[in-house]
Image (tube, rainbow, N blue to C red; front, side, top):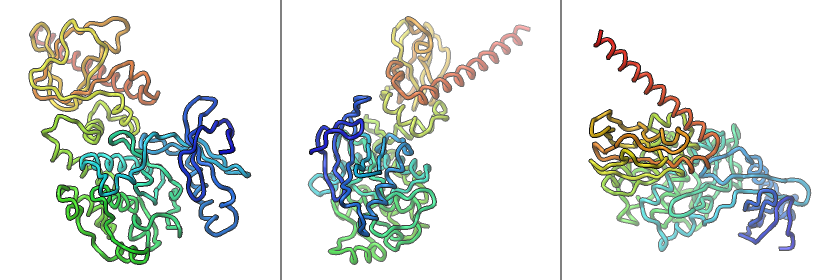
Length: 428
């Protein structure tokens, strides 16, 4: 590495190299944040036909700088595509691609695969709403962090807004949809098909079609039905076989019509096979958040943020969650179940799914003692949020919490006024 500084970025070390670019770990000297810089080889971007294709891919990806802001999509922070030094600055993701986990001897647990696929669905649904179709979904373009966190990268092949026809030379044949290999007009359903192939590969370590060349691969994609994943990995549940088959339907009318349909079926799989387990998967958490009244005005991006800053646990019937006189500033939201609110042993109220309690400790400045007991009336799934952690959230996320608290307090005030009116009427 001869270049040490590019713009305001100091290059630290090489992360990887490809046909047209080299990726470096770098430091933004202004913010001191780590970033990844993709430095393009300008010699390969001159006048050949292939070079023109690569140039188009680079310009497409660079045009997305600041456009896609989602926790499961790698952010493009900056791009310079002029002169001899052409580079793109991206969020640095510490992890590896899914390529290794698409091999037979490194397969992930089935529940982890389903969770990864759910997050991919939600990220690509967000991209679609921004007018972007990826068109090159494959394990190499999905980064894995930790056990099941993912970030989708490499939007160079993306179609933006109305530009949805296939461009020759773009995409990976093994993961292409039938309409993509036919070079027909594309919609988000081409990404749904490709993600179905990724799911097949992660479950089995095999591609759905065994071909020795691209011509054979294309013929099979158009004409042949692949074996179900369970044929290669018997422990794959029937529910996932059905999900893969529908995602990979050759006829788009039979394929999932929306990302939400795909995601809902994955949630159904978790509901069916994990009901007795103590662990709460991110898939279940996100689906719960989106269905709760408290979070009705939160965007999907803000819900993922809530998921990251909250603690979730299951509480047994009759277990105390708060005791009168306790300290602490955390507040709680019921994802499932019912709790009793008691004052000196007397029942004040029942709170149900979507209700919040303990928020006065957060909303009141200074030291605060809990003034009631809160006891589980049934098995409960509890969301706990620490106000100090909430302060680190984005301004949009904090605003949505403030708005939700205001709506909740107005509702409680209205109920209190109704009760007072009834008491006064009874006295009169």
